[in-house]
Length: 237
Image 1 (cartoon, rainbow, N blue to C red):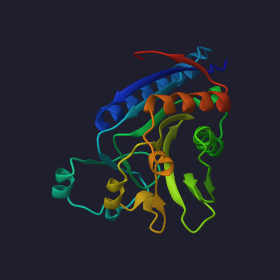
Image 2: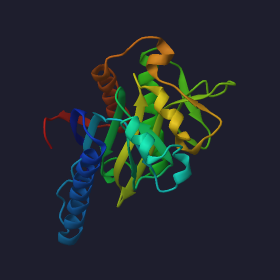
Image 3: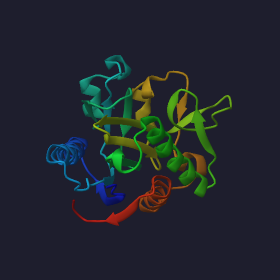
Image 4: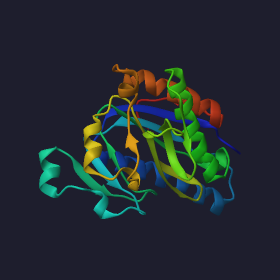
């Protein structure tokens, strides 16, 4: 039996290590539910979760990334009050910080569709539709996961990075949309391992500061519409 109900939590600011542990806990919970169902041949529905948060300054390196794509040493990390983690998602290095909307879907894709390519495209599409709500024209670049502004111009710039992990069709990690982000922090890395393209934010594109919670609400709406989710807002999972 498919369960399209998704528990949603808007956390606010959470240190990266804490958020990673939180994701891992929920991720394992869903996998354990699936294994229990299989072993008992039962039909108890698995649960789905969607976390929205912001992180203090942090760089994360995915499994396919290179250490050399972090361009600063430990002393400089301390000076700019940033941390660094090598993690278990796909992709290369990226930055998270204040003013950036980070979304972590922990979904059992057996409740929706078992297609990772489609999953990534739907996340991109939710971001593209959200940006369109603010009259920002965004799109994809072939073979580069994420969302871009000016994709077909001489100045393509990335506004949203995506990196995920899946096991038994359960997802974790997700996407990071630059809203009011301090883009200077991207100067200390080779973002997503891409050397010839810039990064941007909604604030930079529009010339004004946006309300984070409002952007989150629009993202929720589009994710729910695309995936066929029934959202249920909760304080704690």
